[in-house]
Length: 574
Image 1 (cartoon, rainbow, N blue to C red):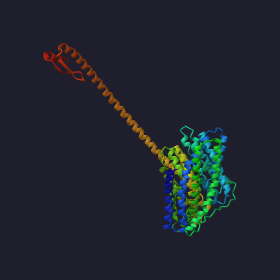
Image 2: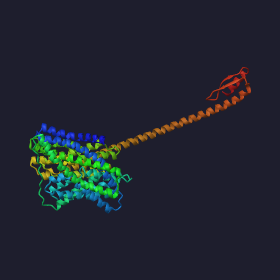
Image 3: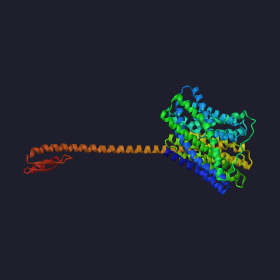
Image 4: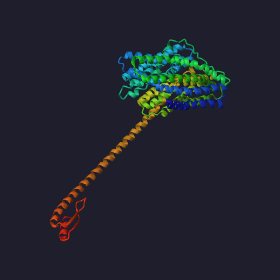
Protein backbone atom coordinates (compact mmCIF):
# COMPACT_ATOMS: atom_id res chain seq x y z
CA UNK A 1 0.00 0.00 0.00
CA UNK A 2 2.81 2.42 0.89
CA UNK A 3 4.55 1.78 -2.43
CA UNK A 4 1.30 2.38 -4.31
CA UNK A 5 0.73 5.63 -2.43
CA UNK A 6 4.27 6.80 -3.21
CA UNK A 7 3.68 6.11 -6.91
CA UNK A 8 0.40 8.03 -6.80
CA UNK A 9 2.06 10.96 -5.04
CA UNK A 10 4.77 11.11 -7.70
CA UNK A 11 2.22 10.98 -10.52
CA UNK A 12 0.08 13.69 -8.92
CA UNK A 13 3.06 15.94 -8.21
CA UNK A 14 4.25 15.89 -11.83
CA UNK A 15 0.66 16.36 -13.06
CA UNK A 16 0.07 19.49 -10.94
CA UNK A 17 3.59 20.96 -11.29
CA UNK A 18 3.28 22.39 -14.86
CA UNK A 19 0.09 24.36 -14.25
CA UNK A 20 1.53 25.65 -10.94
CA UNK A 21 4.69 26.88 -12.68
CA UNK A 22 2.63 28.55 -15.44
CA UNK A 23 0.53 30.50 -12.92
CA UNK A 24 3.59 31.56 -10.93
CA UNK A 25 5.41 32.72 -14.07
CA UNK A 26 2.32 34.64 -15.17
CA UNK A 27 2.11 36.39 -11.78
CA UNK A 28 5.79 37.39 -12.05
CA UNK A 29 6.18 38.28 -15.73
CA UNK A 30 2.74 39.41 -16.92
CA UNK A 31 0.37 40.42 -14.13
CA UNK A 32 1.52 40.61 -10.49
CA UNK A 33 -0.96 39.08 -8.03
CA UNK A 34 -1.17 39.91 -4.35
CA UNK A 35 0.57 37.65 -1.87
CA UNK A 36 -2.71 36.40 -0.42
CA UNK A 37 -3.96 35.09 -3.77
CA UNK A 38 -0.64 33.38 -4.53
CA UNK A 39 -0.57 31.92 -1.01
CA UNK A 40 -4.03 30.44 -1.47
CA UNK A 41 -2.98 29.06 -4.84
CA UNK A 42 0.15 27.34 -3.46
CA UNK A 43 -1.85 25.74 -0.65
CA UNK A 44 -4.34 24.72 -3.33
CA UNK A 45 -1.55 23.00 -5.32
CA UNK A 46 -0.52 21.06 -2.20
CA UNK A 47 -4.11 19.98 -1.58
CA UNK A 48 -4.40 18.89 -5.22
CA UNK A 49 -1.34 16.64 -5.01
CA UNK A 50 -2.46 14.93 -1.79
CA UNK A 51 -6.11 14.77 -2.86
CA UNK A 52 -5.38 13.33 -6.31
CA UNK A 53 -3.08 10.70 -4.82
CA UNK A 54 -5.60 9.49 -2.25
CA UNK A 55 -8.48 9.61 -4.72
CA UNK A 56 -6.59 7.66 -7.38
CA UNK A 57 -5.53 5.02 -4.87
CA UNK A 58 -9.08 4.77 -3.52
CA UNK A 59 -10.48 4.42 -7.04
CA UNK A 60 -8.12 1.53 -7.73
CA UNK A 61 -8.95 -0.47 -4.61
CA UNK A 62 -12.62 0.46 -4.07
CA UNK A 63 -14.52 2.31 -6.82
CA UNK A 64 -13.25 0.19 -9.71
CA UNK A 65 -13.85 -3.21 -7.99
CA UNK A 66 -17.29 -2.01 -6.85
CA UNK A 67 -18.30 -0.96 -10.34
CA UNK A 68 -16.87 -4.06 -11.99
CA UNK A 69 -18.56 -6.37 -9.48
CA UNK A 70 -21.94 -4.72 -9.97
CA UNK A 71 -21.47 -4.90 -13.75
CA UNK A 72 -20.71 -8.63 -13.64
CA UNK A 73 -23.80 -9.29 -11.56
CA UNK A 74 -26.03 -7.19 -13.80
CA UNK A 75 -24.77 -9.06 -16.87
CA UNK A 76 -26.38 -12.23 -15.51
CA UNK A 77 -29.83 -10.59 -15.36
CA UNK A 78 -32.02 -12.01 -18.14
CA UNK A 79 -34.94 -9.58 -17.76
CA UNK A 80 -34.21 -6.42 -19.72
CA UNK A 81 -36.85 -4.39 -17.88
CA UNK A 82 -35.32 -5.17 -14.47
CA UNK A 83 -31.84 -4.50 -15.87
CA UNK A 84 -32.92 -1.13 -17.29
CA UNK A 85 -34.56 -0.06 -14.02
CA UNK A 86 -31.52 -0.98 -11.91
CA UNK A 87 -29.11 0.73 -14.28
CA UNK A 88 -31.22 3.91 -14.34
CA UNK A 89 -31.24 4.09 -10.53
CA UNK A 90 -27.45 3.54 -10.38
CA UNK A 91 -26.84 6.25 -12.99
CA UNK A 92 -29.11 8.72 -11.20
CA UNK A 93 -27.55 8.16 -7.77
CA UNK A 94 -23.90 8.46 -8.79
CA UNK A 95 -24.60 11.59 -10.85
CA UNK A 96 -26.28 13.34 -7.93
CA UNK A 97 -23.03 12.63 -6.03
CA UNK A 98 -20.87 14.23 -8.76
CA UNK A 99 -19.14 17.35 -7.33
CA UNK A 100 -18.38 18.81 -10.78
CA UNK A 101 -22.09 19.10 -11.44
CA UNK A 102 -22.57 21.03 -8.20
CA UNK A 103 -19.82 23.47 -9.26
CA UNK A 104 -21.50 24.12 -12.61
CA UNK A 105 -24.95 24.46 -11.01
CA UNK A 106 -23.60 27.05 -8.55
CA UNK A 107 -22.27 29.14 -11.46
CA UNK A 108 -25.57 29.08 -13.39
CA UNK A 109 -28.24 30.48 -11.05
CA UNK A 110 -30.47 31.08 -14.09
CA UNK A 111 -31.48 27.43 -13.62
CA UNK A 112 -32.34 26.31 -10.06
CA UNK A 113 -29.60 24.07 -8.67
CA UNK A 114 -31.82 21.11 -7.77
CA UNK A 115 -33.60 21.32 -11.12
CA UNK A 116 -30.35 21.24 -13.06
CA UNK A 117 -28.86 18.42 -10.97
CA UNK A 118 -32.02 16.27 -11.19
CA UNK A 119 -32.27 16.87 -14.96
CA UNK A 120 -28.65 15.91 -15.58
CA UNK A 121 -28.94 12.86 -13.29
CA UNK A 122 -32.01 11.66 -15.18
CA UNK A 123 -30.15 12.15 -18.45
CA UNK A 124 -27.21 10.06 -17.20
CA UNK A 125 -29.56 7.33 -15.97
CA UNK A 126 -31.39 7.17 -19.31
CA UNK A 127 -28.21 7.18 -21.38
CA UNK A 128 -26.70 4.48 -19.16
CA UNK A 129 -29.74 2.29 -19.86
CA UNK A 130 -29.24 2.84 -23.59
CA UNK A 131 -25.53 2.05 -23.29
CA UNK A 132 -26.10 -1.21 -21.40
CA UNK A 133 -28.82 -2.39 -23.77
CA UNK A 134 -26.57 -1.54 -26.71
CA UNK A 135 -23.91 -3.81 -25.24
CA UNK A 136 -26.42 -6.59 -24.62
CA UNK A 137 -27.78 -6.53 -28.18
CA UNK A 138 -24.32 -5.72 -29.63
CA UNK A 139 -25.50 -2.67 -31.57
CA UNK A 140 -22.56 -0.86 -33.26
CA UNK A 141 -21.36 2.01 -31.11
CA UNK A 142 -21.01 4.41 -34.05
CA UNK A 143 -24.67 3.96 -35.04
CA UNK A 144 -25.78 4.71 -31.48
CA UNK A 145 -23.70 7.89 -31.42
CA UNK A 146 -25.09 9.11 -34.73
CA UNK A 147 -28.66 8.56 -33.54
CA UNK A 148 -28.22 10.35 -30.22
CA UNK A 149 -26.20 13.31 -31.50
CA UNK A 150 -28.49 13.67 -34.52
CA UNK A 151 -31.39 14.12 -32.09
CA UNK A 152 -29.34 16.60 -30.04
CA UNK A 153 -28.63 18.82 -33.03
CA UNK A 154 -32.29 18.83 -34.04
CA UNK A 155 -33.36 19.90 -30.53
CA UNK A 156 -30.62 22.54 -30.34
CA UNK A 157 -32.35 24.47 -33.15
CA UNK A 158 -35.33 25.19 -30.90
CA UNK A 159 -33.61 26.26 -27.65
CA UNK A 160 -32.05 29.57 -26.67
CA UNK A 161 -28.25 30.07 -26.94
CA UNK A 162 -28.11 30.15 -23.13
CA UNK A 163 -29.46 26.62 -22.79
CA UNK A 164 -27.32 25.43 -25.68
CA UNK A 165 -24.08 26.38 -23.89
CA UNK A 166 -25.25 25.15 -20.48
CA UNK A 167 -26.52 21.83 -21.89
CA UNK A 168 -23.21 20.93 -23.55
CA UNK A 169 -21.31 22.04 -20.46
CA UNK A 170 -23.58 19.86 -18.31
CA UNK A 171 -22.74 16.90 -20.52
CA UNK A 172 -19.07 17.55 -19.94
CA UNK A 173 -19.14 17.76 -16.15
CA UNK A 174 -21.64 14.93 -15.58
CA UNK A 175 -18.90 12.29 -15.91
CA UNK A 176 -16.41 13.55 -13.35
CA UNK A 177 -14.14 11.93 -10.76
CA UNK A 178 -16.91 9.89 -9.07
CA UNK A 179 -19.11 8.98 -12.02
CA UNK A 180 -16.49 8.17 -14.66
CA UNK A 181 -14.40 5.52 -12.81
CA UNK A 182 -17.53 3.78 -11.51
CA UNK A 183 -19.28 3.66 -14.90
CA UNK A 184 -16.09 2.66 -16.68
CA UNK A 185 -15.56 -0.23 -14.25
CA UNK A 186 -19.19 -1.27 -14.59
CA UNK A 187 -18.68 -1.51 -18.35
CA UNK A 188 -15.71 -3.82 -17.78
CA UNK A 189 -17.88 -6.00 -15.55
CA UNK A 190 -20.73 -6.17 -18.06
CA UNK A 191 -18.48 -7.66 -20.76
CA UNK A 192 -16.24 -9.73 -18.45
CA UNK A 193 -18.30 -12.90 -19.00
CA UNK A 194 -18.38 -12.51 -22.77
CA UNK A 195 -15.86 -14.33 -24.96
CA UNK A 196 -16.63 -12.78 -28.37
CA UNK A 197 -14.20 -10.57 -30.27
CA UNK A 198 -16.24 -7.40 -29.61
CA UNK A 199 -16.10 -7.72 -25.81
CA UNK A 200 -13.02 -5.53 -25.34
CA UNK A 201 -14.40 -2.91 -27.76
CA UNK A 202 -17.79 -2.81 -26.00
CA UNK A 203 -16.14 -2.25 -22.61
CA UNK A 204 -15.50 1.33 -23.77
CA UNK A 205 -18.23 3.85 -24.59
CA UNK A 206 -20.42 3.88 -21.47
CA UNK A 207 -18.87 7.12 -20.21
CA UNK A 208 -19.32 8.66 -23.66
CA UNK A 209 -23.04 7.91 -23.85
CA UNK A 210 -23.49 9.09 -20.27
CA UNK A 211 -22.07 12.45 -21.38
CA UNK A 212 -24.60 12.72 -24.22
CA UNK A 213 -27.66 11.98 -22.07
CA UNK A 214 -27.41 15.14 -19.92
CA UNK A 215 -27.10 17.32 -23.05
CA UNK A 216 -30.37 15.88 -24.31
CA UNK A 217 -32.05 16.28 -20.91
CA UNK A 218 -31.02 19.94 -20.46
CA UNK A 219 -32.08 20.76 -24.04
CA UNK A 220 -35.51 19.30 -23.26
CA UNK A 221 -35.56 21.42 -20.11
CA UNK A 222 -34.76 24.42 -22.29
CA UNK A 223 -37.83 23.74 -24.45
CA UNK A 224 -40.11 24.13 -21.43
CA UNK A 225 -38.16 26.96 -19.75
CA UNK A 226 -38.12 29.66 -22.39
CA UNK A 227 -38.48 32.51 -19.90
CA UNK A 228 -35.23 31.89 -18.04
CA UNK A 229 -32.90 34.91 -17.74
CA UNK A 230 -29.26 34.71 -18.82
CA UNK A 231 -27.88 35.15 -15.31
CA UNK A 232 -24.69 33.72 -13.88
CA UNK A 233 -22.92 33.78 -10.54
CA UNK A 234 -20.04 36.29 -10.60
CA UNK A 235 -16.67 35.08 -9.38
CA UNK A 236 -15.68 36.52 -5.99
CA UNK A 237 -11.94 36.89 -5.43
CA UNK A 238 -11.13 36.75 -1.69
CA UNK A 239 -9.02 39.60 -0.34
CA UNK A 240 -6.35 37.98 1.84
CA UNK A 241 -3.33 39.89 3.12
CA UNK A 242 -1.27 37.48 5.24
CA UNK A 243 -0.62 33.79 5.86
CA UNK A 244 -3.04 33.65 8.80
CA UNK A 245 -5.91 34.79 6.60
CA UNK A 246 -4.91 32.22 3.99
CA UNK A 247 -4.89 29.47 6.61
CA UNK A 248 -8.25 30.56 8.04
CA UNK A 249 -9.74 30.59 4.55
CA UNK A 250 -9.00 26.87 4.24
CA UNK A 251 -10.01 26.16 7.83
CA UNK A 252 -13.50 27.51 7.07
CA UNK A 253 -13.72 25.93 3.62
CA UNK A 254 -12.56 22.41 4.49
CA UNK A 255 -15.52 21.43 6.75
CA UNK A 256 -17.99 22.80 4.22
CA UNK A 257 -16.58 20.71 1.40
CA UNK A 258 -16.23 17.69 3.69
CA UNK A 259 -19.93 17.90 4.43
CA UNK A 260 -20.81 18.39 0.77
CA UNK A 261 -18.73 15.45 -0.47
CA UNK A 262 -19.82 13.16 2.38
CA UNK A 263 -23.51 13.86 1.71
CA UNK A 264 -22.88 13.25 -1.98
CA UNK A 265 -21.22 9.84 -1.58
CA UNK A 266 -23.56 8.51 1.13
CA UNK A 267 -26.10 7.34 -1.51
CA UNK A 268 -23.32 5.38 -3.25
CA UNK A 269 -22.25 3.75 0.02
CA UNK A 270 -25.84 2.83 0.93
CA UNK A 271 -26.46 1.43 -2.55
CA UNK A 272 -23.34 -0.70 -2.33
CA UNK A 273 -24.33 -2.04 1.09
CA UNK A 274 -27.80 -2.99 -0.19
CA UNK A 275 -26.24 -4.64 -3.23
CA UNK A 276 -23.87 -6.64 -1.02
CA UNK A 277 -26.62 -7.73 1.36
CA UNK A 278 -28.83 -8.90 -1.49
CA UNK A 279 -26.21 -10.56 -3.70
CA UNK A 280 -23.18 -11.36 -1.46
CA UNK A 281 -21.08 -10.56 -4.48
CA UNK A 282 -17.92 -9.72 -2.53
CA UNK A 283 -16.26 -12.02 -0.02
CA UNK A 284 -15.81 -10.97 3.60
CA UNK A 285 -12.06 -10.54 3.29
CA UNK A 286 -12.59 -8.15 0.35
CA UNK A 287 -14.92 -5.81 2.24
CA UNK A 288 -12.30 -4.22 4.59
CA UNK A 289 -10.11 -3.38 1.59
CA UNK A 290 -13.06 -1.81 -0.23
CA UNK A 291 -13.98 0.15 2.90
CA UNK A 292 -10.41 1.51 3.23
CA UNK A 293 -10.41 2.42 -0.46
CA UNK A 294 -13.72 4.18 -0.05
CA UNK A 295 -12.26 6.26 2.81
CA UNK A 296 -9.24 7.14 0.63
CA UNK A 297 -11.59 8.23 -2.14
CA UNK A 298 -13.66 10.35 0.23
CA UNK A 299 -10.70 12.11 1.89
CA UNK A 300 -8.91 12.60 -1.42
CA UNK A 301 -11.97 14.13 -3.05
CA UNK A 302 -12.51 16.49 -0.10
CA UNK A 303 -8.92 17.77 -0.28
CA UNK A 304 -8.95 18.00 -4.07
CA UNK A 305 -12.22 19.92 -4.32
CA UNK A 306 -11.30 22.23 -1.44
CA UNK A 307 -8.07 23.14 -3.15
CA UNK A 308 -9.60 23.58 -6.60
CA UNK A 309 -12.52 25.69 -5.44
CA UNK A 310 -10.55 27.89 -3.07
CA UNK A 311 -7.47 28.49 -5.21
CA UNK A 312 -8.11 27.80 -8.86
CA UNK A 313 -11.41 29.62 -9.43
CA UNK A 314 -10.10 33.02 -8.34
CA UNK A 315 -6.71 32.61 -10.07
CA UNK A 316 -8.32 31.49 -13.34
CA UNK A 317 -10.71 34.43 -13.25
CA UNK A 318 -7.92 36.95 -12.52
CA UNK A 319 -5.73 35.65 -15.35
CA UNK A 320 -8.58 35.86 -17.87
CA UNK A 321 -9.88 39.26 -16.73
CA UNK A 322 -6.51 41.02 -16.56
CA UNK A 323 -5.31 39.75 -19.92
CA UNK A 324 -8.58 40.65 -21.63
CA UNK A 325 -8.58 44.21 -20.29
CA UNK A 326 -4.95 44.85 -21.22
CA UNK A 327 -3.26 45.61 -24.52
CA UNK A 328 -2.12 42.02 -24.99
CA UNK A 329 -5.51 40.29 -24.92
CA UNK A 330 -4.36 38.16 -27.88
CA UNK A 331 -2.04 36.40 -25.41
CA UNK A 332 -5.11 34.54 -24.13
CA UNK A 333 -4.95 32.25 -27.18
CA UNK A 334 -1.36 30.93 -26.82
CA UNK A 335 -1.75 30.91 -23.03
CA UNK A 336 -4.90 28.84 -23.49
CA UNK A 337 -2.93 26.37 -25.60
CA UNK A 338 -0.29 25.95 -22.90
CA UNK A 339 -2.73 25.78 -19.99
CA UNK A 340 -5.00 23.34 -21.82
CA UNK A 341 -2.09 21.06 -22.67
CA UNK A 342 -1.05 20.64 -19.04
CA UNK A 343 -4.30 21.04 -17.11
CA UNK A 344 -5.86 17.77 -18.35
CA UNK A 345 -3.05 15.80 -16.70
CA UNK A 346 -4.34 16.93 -13.30
CA UNK A 347 -7.83 15.48 -13.86
CA UNK A 348 -8.33 12.46 -11.53
CA UNK A 349 -10.67 10.58 -13.89
CA UNK A 350 -8.19 10.96 -16.76
CA UNK A 351 -5.55 9.16 -14.71
CA UNK A 352 -7.95 6.25 -14.15
CA UNK A 353 -8.91 6.02 -17.82
CA UNK A 354 -5.42 6.03 -19.36
CA UNK A 355 -4.18 3.34 -16.97
CA UNK A 356 -7.09 1.03 -17.72
CA UNK A 357 -6.76 1.59 -21.46
CA UNK A 358 -3.10 0.55 -21.33
CA UNK A 359 -3.98 -2.55 -19.29
CA UNK A 360 -6.87 -3.64 -21.52
CA UNK A 361 -4.94 -3.02 -24.74
CA UNK A 362 -2.03 -5.11 -23.53
CA UNK A 363 0.29 -2.10 -23.71
CA UNK A 364 -0.33 -1.44 -27.42
CA UNK A 365 -1.97 1.90 -26.44
CA UNK A 366 0.39 3.42 -23.90
CA UNK A 367 -0.48 5.92 -21.18
CA UNK A 368 2.00 8.41 -22.62
CA UNK A 369 0.47 8.27 -26.12
CA UNK A 370 -3.10 8.58 -24.86
CA UNK A 371 -2.22 11.41 -22.49
CA UNK A 372 -0.44 13.24 -25.31
CA UNK A 373 -3.50 12.94 -27.54
CA UNK A 374 -5.75 14.20 -24.75
CA UNK A 375 -3.41 17.09 -23.98
CA UNK A 376 -3.34 18.21 -27.61
CA UNK A 377 -7.12 18.01 -27.81
CA UNK A 378 -7.71 20.03 -24.64
CA UNK A 379 -5.07 22.58 -25.69
CA UNK A 380 -6.99 23.15 -28.92
CA UNK A 381 -10.25 23.37 -26.95
CA UNK A 382 -9.04 26.12 -24.61
CA UNK A 383 -7.51 28.09 -27.49
CA UNK A 384 -10.80 27.87 -29.43
CA UNK A 385 -12.71 28.98 -26.31
CA UNK A 386 -10.47 32.05 -26.00
CA UNK A 387 -11.05 32.85 -29.69
CA UNK A 388 -14.82 32.62 -29.09
CA UNK A 389 -14.56 34.99 -26.11
CA UNK A 390 -12.47 37.55 -28.00
CA UNK A 391 -14.47 37.45 -31.25
CA UNK A 392 -17.99 36.45 -30.14
CA UNK A 393 -18.20 33.59 -32.67
CA UNK A 394 -21.37 31.58 -32.24
CA UNK A 395 -20.96 28.17 -30.64
CA UNK A 396 -22.86 26.60 -33.57
CA UNK A 397 -19.96 27.34 -35.94
CA UNK A 398 -17.70 25.12 -33.84
CA UNK A 399 -19.92 22.50 -32.25
CA UNK A 400 -21.75 21.34 -35.39
CA UNK A 401 -18.69 20.96 -37.70
CA UNK A 402 -16.73 19.47 -34.80
CA UNK A 403 -19.27 16.76 -34.09
CA UNK A 404 -19.72 16.05 -37.81
CA UNK A 405 -15.99 15.31 -37.99
CA UNK A 406 -16.11 13.32 -34.73
CA UNK A 407 -19.06 11.22 -35.96
CA UNK A 408 -17.48 10.62 -39.39
CA UNK A 409 -14.10 9.41 -38.15
CA UNK A 410 -15.50 6.18 -36.55
CA UNK A 411 -15.95 4.75 -40.06
CA UNK A 412 -12.18 4.97 -40.68
CA UNK A 413 -10.48 4.19 -37.36
CA UNK A 414 -10.02 0.89 -35.47
CA UNK A 415 -13.17 0.19 -33.46
CA UNK A 416 -11.46 0.13 -30.08
CA UNK A 417 -10.37 3.77 -30.56
CA UNK A 418 -13.98 4.93 -31.02
CA UNK A 419 -15.03 4.04 -27.49
CA UNK A 420 -11.72 5.24 -26.04
CA UNK A 421 -12.02 8.61 -27.80
CA UNK A 422 -15.57 9.26 -26.64
CA UNK A 423 -14.78 8.08 -23.10
CA UNK A 424 -11.79 10.44 -23.10
CA UNK A 425 -14.12 13.26 -24.13
CA UNK A 426 -16.27 12.36 -21.14
CA UNK A 427 -13.51 12.41 -18.52
CA UNK A 428 -11.44 15.36 -19.83
CA UNK A 429 -13.79 18.10 -18.51
CA UNK A 430 -13.43 17.42 -14.78
CA UNK A 431 -12.94 19.61 -11.70
CA UNK A 432 -9.94 21.40 -13.20
CA UNK A 433 -12.04 22.43 -16.19
CA UNK A 434 -15.05 23.53 -14.15
CA UNK A 435 -12.97 25.34 -11.54
CA UNK A 436 -10.14 26.81 -13.63
CA UNK A 437 -10.86 26.89 -17.37
CA UNK A 438 -14.47 28.06 -17.02
CA UNK A 439 -13.53 30.92 -14.63
CA UNK A 440 -10.69 31.78 -17.04
CA UNK A 441 -13.25 32.13 -19.84
CA UNK A 442 -15.66 34.06 -17.58
CA UNK A 443 -12.93 36.52 -16.54
CA UNK A 444 -11.85 37.05 -20.16
CA UNK A 445 -15.45 37.52 -21.29
CA UNK A 446 -16.12 40.10 -18.58
CA UNK A 447 -12.90 41.83 -19.54
CA UNK A 448 -13.94 42.29 -23.20
CA UNK A 449 -17.56 43.06 -22.26
CA UNK A 450 -19.10 39.96 -23.84
CA UNK A 451 -22.15 37.89 -22.96
CA UNK A 452 -20.88 35.47 -20.33
CA UNK A 453 -23.74 32.95 -20.61
CA UNK A 454 -23.33 32.67 -24.39
CA UNK A 455 -19.62 33.33 -25.01
CA UNK A 456 -17.90 31.99 -21.86
CA UNK A 457 -20.17 29.07 -21.08
CA UNK A 458 -19.44 26.40 -23.63
CA UNK A 459 -15.76 26.19 -22.71
CA UNK A 460 -16.44 22.88 -20.96
CA UNK A 461 -18.15 21.53 -24.08
CA UNK A 462 -15.09 22.45 -26.15
CA UNK A 463 -12.95 20.38 -23.78
CA UNK A 464 -15.39 17.48 -24.23
CA UNK A 465 -15.39 17.78 -28.05
CA UNK A 466 -11.77 18.12 -29.14
CA UNK A 467 -10.48 14.88 -27.52
CA UNK A 468 -13.01 12.96 -29.63
CA UNK A 469 -11.25 14.18 -32.76
CA UNK A 470 -7.68 14.08 -31.38
CA UNK A 471 -7.87 10.49 -30.09
CA UNK A 472 -9.58 9.24 -33.24
CA UNK A 473 -6.89 10.89 -35.39
CA UNK A 474 -4.37 9.09 -33.19
CA UNK A 475 -6.31 5.88 -33.88
CA UNK A 476 -6.22 6.63 -37.60
CA UNK A 477 -2.41 6.98 -37.46
CA UNK A 478 -2.22 3.84 -35.34
CA UNK A 479 -4.32 1.95 -37.90
CA UNK A 480 -2.09 3.08 -40.78
CA UNK A 481 1.04 2.01 -38.90
CA UNK A 482 -0.63 -1.30 -38.09
CA UNK A 483 -1.40 -1.88 -41.78
CA UNK A 484 2.18 -1.04 -42.72
CA UNK A 485 3.39 -3.42 -40.05
CA UNK A 486 1.09 -6.14 -41.38
CA UNK A 487 2.38 -5.56 -44.93
CA UNK A 488 5.95 -5.81 -43.68
CA UNK A 489 5.07 -9.01 -41.81
CA UNK A 490 3.53 -10.44 -44.98
CA UNK A 491 6.66 -9.51 -46.96
CA UNK A 492 8.86 -11.12 -44.32
CA UNK A 493 6.66 -14.23 -44.29
CA UNK A 494 6.88 -14.45 -48.10
CA UNK A 495 10.66 -14.05 -47.97
CA UNK A 496 10.84 -16.65 -45.22
CA UNK A 497 8.71 -19.07 -47.27
CA UNK A 498 10.98 -18.59 -50.30
CA UNK A 499 14.04 -19.18 -48.11
CA UNK A 500 12.49 -22.35 -46.72
CA UNK A 501 11.78 -23.58 -50.26
CA UNK A 502 15.42 -22.96 -51.27
CA UNK A 503 16.63 -24.69 -48.16
CA UNK A 504 14.33 -27.61 -48.86
CA UNK A 505 15.70 -27.89 -52.40
CA UNK A 506 19.26 -27.76 -51.06
CA UNK A 507 18.35 -30.38 -48.46
CA UNK A 508 16.97 -32.58 -51.23
CA UNK A 509 20.18 -32.25 -53.22
CA UNK A 510 22.24 -33.00 -50.15
CA UNK A 511 20.00 -35.96 -49.43
CA UNK A 512 20.51 -37.31 -52.93
CA UNK A 513 24.29 -36.93 -52.61
CA UNK A 514 24.14 -38.64 -49.27
CA UNK A 515 22.18 -41.52 -50.76
CA UNK A 516 24.73 -41.88 -53.59
CA UNK A 517 27.54 -41.87 -51.04
CA UNK A 518 25.76 -44.47 -48.93
CA UNK A 519 25.33 -46.71 -52.00
CA UNK A 520 29.04 -46.36 -52.80
CA UNK A 521 29.98 -47.16 -49.23
CA UNK A 522 27.72 -50.22 -49.24
CA UNK A 523 29.33 -51.44 -52.45
CA UNK A 524 32.77 -50.92 -50.97
CA UNK A 525 31.81 -52.82 -47.84
CA UNK A 526 30.50 -55.70 -49.97
CA UNK A 527 33.76 -55.74 -51.89
CA UNK A 528 35.72 -55.67 -48.64
CA UNK A 529 33.68 -58.56 -47.31
CA UNK A 530 34.43 -60.63 -50.42
CA UNK A 531 38.12 -59.69 -50.12
CA UNK A 532 38.07 -60.63 -46.48
CA UNK A 533 36.69 -64.07 -47.29
CA UNK A 534 39.24 -64.62 -50.06
CA UNK A 535 42.08 -63.40 -47.88
CA UNK A 536 41.11 -65.88 -45.19
CA UNK A 537 41.62 -68.58 -47.77
CA UNK A 538 45.11 -67.24 -48.46
CA UNK A 539 46.38 -66.12 -45.08
CA UNK A 540 47.01 -68.63 -42.35
CA UNK A 541 46.83 -67.93 -38.67
CA UNK A 542 50.02 -65.89 -38.73
CA UNK A 543 48.63 -63.34 -41.18
CA UNK A 544 47.02 -60.10 -40.09
CA UNK A 545 44.54 -57.96 -42.05
CA UNK A 546 43.75 -54.41 -40.83
CA UNK A 547 40.46 -52.84 -42.06
CA UNK A 548 39.47 -49.14 -42.14
CA UNK A 549 36.69 -48.44 -39.57
CA UNK A 550 34.72 -46.08 -41.78
CA UNK A 551 34.82 -47.73 -45.20
CA UNK A 552 35.59 -51.32 -44.39
CA UNK A 553 38.47 -51.29 -46.90
CA UNK A 554 41.69 -53.16 -46.28
CA UNK A 555 44.26 -50.75 -44.91
CA UNK A 556 47.28 -52.96 -44.11
CA UNK A 557 48.19 -56.63 -44.63
CA UNK A 558 50.86 -58.39 -42.64
CA UNK A 559 51.93 -61.82 -43.79
CA UNK A 560 55.34 -63.36 -43.84
CA UNK A 561 54.96 -66.08 -46.48
CA UNK A 562 52.49 -65.16 -49.27
CA UNK A 563 52.92 -61.43 -49.69
CA UNK A 564 52.76 -61.56 -53.48
CA UNK A 565 49.50 -63.54 -53.50
CA UNK A 566 47.96 -61.15 -50.98
CA UNK A 567 48.84 -58.08 -53.03
CA UNK A 568 47.35 -59.75 -56.06
CA UNK A 569 44.09 -60.44 -54.21
CA UNK A 570 43.83 -56.91 -52.84
CA UNK A 571 44.49 -55.35 -56.22
CA UNK A 572 41.63 -57.42 -57.63
CA UNK A 573 39.12 -55.64 -55.33
CA UNK A 574 40.52 -52.10 -55.37
